[in-house]
Length: 383
Image 1: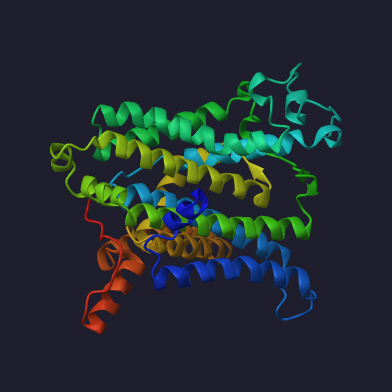
Image 2: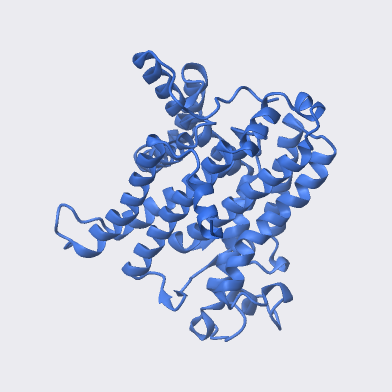
C-alpha cells in the first residue's frame, strides 16, 4: 500500500453517511456560490453579489475556527479562551505577505517598506518581515507561528498539570498580552490600524471577482479537509485516548498514558487549524488589526461551539454560521441590542439545549428511530 493510500485511508476513517452528506454540502456550497457569482448576470434572481461571496467566505473561515476549538474542548476537555490569538497570528502572517506585495503602489511608493513604516519613520525593514515577499514562506508561517506558540504554552502548562479554569485563564491572559503588544507602533505590525490596503495575492488582484471566488472555494476546501482530519483523529485510537483524558484524566494517567503529550499534540494541531482559518479570513475581509486578539472574540468563539453542540464536529460549524449570520442581521437591524441577543442565546442554549443544536437533534432522531445510531463520543462536562 502506498503512502498516498495510507493518508487517504486515514482521512476517510469513520466517515459515515452523515459525514458524507456534510462534506457534499460544504463542497457544493464552495462550488455553487462562486459559480452563481461569476456565471449569472447581475440582474438574475440566481446571482450572488460580490459582498455575499466575501461574507459567506468569512463564515466558512469562522466555521473552521470553531471546528478547531471543538477538537480540544469537545474531545479533550481543554477549554481554550485564547484561540482568537492563534487565528489572529495566522491572519497577520498572511497580512504581512499581502503588504509586501503592494510595493511601489503604496501611498509613499516605497518598494520595501509598507506605508505605516514610512509614516513612522522606519529606516529599514525589520528582520522578522524577511521572507514574507514569498507566498510559500508566508504559508509556512501561517501554520508554524500559531503552532509554535501553542506548543510552548502547552509544554509548560500540561507538564505542570494545569487544567480546568486555570488553563482557560492562562490562554485568555496570553490573548490579552498579545492584544496589548500588537497595539504598540514599535512592534512593527501597524499598531492599532493593523495591516490593510492589500492589492494582490499570488499576482491576482484581491478585489477581483475571480480572486474572491477562488478564496471562497479555498475556504470551503479547508473546512472540508479540517473536518476529515478531525473525524479521522477522533475515530482512531488517539481519539479514544483523548476522550478518556477528557472524562477521567487521572485514571488515564494511572493506566500509563503520557497525558501531557496527547494534550500537547491536539492543542498544537488545533492552533495550526485556527491559523489557517485566519490566513483565509484576511484577504477576504481586507484587513487584520489587533482587535482580533480581543478576549471577547475568543469567548464568542466558544459560544459558537456551545450553540452548535460541542463534541459533534458538525455542530460547531452550524453554530459558527448561524451565530455570525444572526450577528450580521441584528447588528444592522437592532445594533444596540445585539450583545443582549447573543447573551440571551447562550443562556437559552445552556438551559434548554445543553448539548447544542446538533447534539439535541441527534438525540431526538435516535429516540424517534428507537435504536442507537453511530455517533461521536458524547462530551461530558470537563473540569
